[in-house]
Length: 157
Image 1 (cartoon, one colour):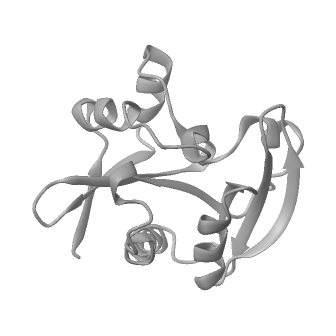
Image 2 (cartoon, one colour):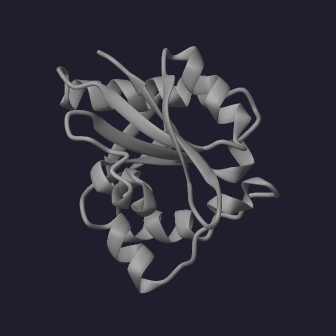
């Protein structure tokens, strides 16, 4: 599958904010509100489309990819590029995650060639953790919020 990315648009952000994941991944459901829309349009989010132009997923970098409670705990020291990503619910569990993740990772490395990469994932999301490990990410730190336990994972260049 060939992917392309573009800066987030209001139309794509609206679609993404309306995505609904089944339990236990419903943890990743968002609300279509002004705050969420503003964050997605601030310049750190990118829409990822298939060769037919269908919205497949998204990724973000910087503070948008960090869990705010983790920032307060000092979990995110300077020096790494944080990124987060999501796939349209209908596409999850279909064996397309590796290809999508490879594309996103390549996009970020192209823009930040000399920086280590870091992501944060809820520890219950074993499927995502296995994927990230496949790409050379290793668990670095773990922290708990009122909603979930998270771990950061890092990969050197």
